[in-house]
Image (cartoon, rainbow, N blue to C red; front, side):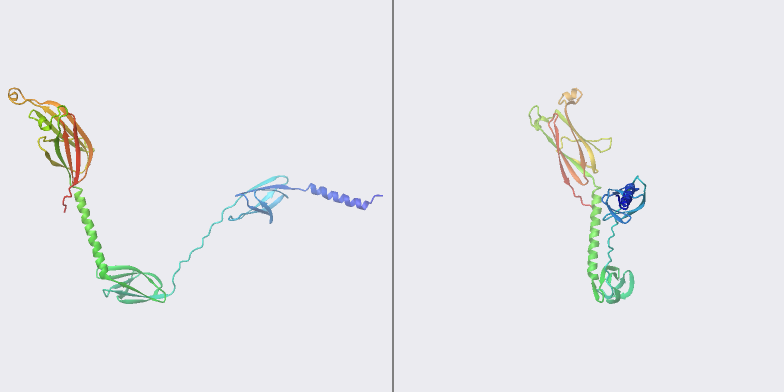
Length: 340
């Protein structure tokens, strides 16, 4: 025979289980930047992001927290059978550095000032104290102060530290200060004078001199003294122009002279050209009967670009063999011309 009371209890339990199986719920997908934030929902810890939860539909309060970041709170509404996505961005906490409080001595102190020249006027922190040395200034705030001591046309500046509850002593020598100042003034004057002298020297011209060497002819092997007989004539020219100029200045050098007088050129960069031309010329009675004409036999050239400095002697030693070989070497020498 069936126990109906027991059967009724079973039916009630099955009803409630079926109701639980069909309970309403939604889904909550939570992510954060950065990952790993701890999540609490309605005050209950749920884990760390990223996180997927089944939760009852309705409004819920989410709190995300992470070390070194400010917490983020957000309220969301979850719908039945739907996924609600929440992305939370956490900001780093501002670093608050402790504010250093400068150490300032408290209290008051005294300052005694002594100078080798008496009756120097005392200025303290830019103000005239009305006191003259030697003197003791009393009840000054402890700490750093500036003083100016004035005697005649001299003024000395210094910084002094007044200790609390003590008398600090400052000793100053106008005599030493005067010597130092005079030495500095003398040094400055000498420096200015040297600068003026150098500026004047830089305006002096460069000097260009020439020396000539006659080499043996390459074709005959004869010495220069044989080659350069009365039938041979050599014309040697030196042309120059400053960088950027278009016109050449030409000077003809005397081949017969062993050394030419220097020429003066202002300092700068120059283009230089040297040309040696050898001529044959009739001699003797033929020059009386027939018009004398020079015949060009050979020519040689040399060119260069050169920086010429002020007050410097440049000596060009030119060598010519009577053919196509013209060579040179340059010697430089500072002149150190006296400038006043």
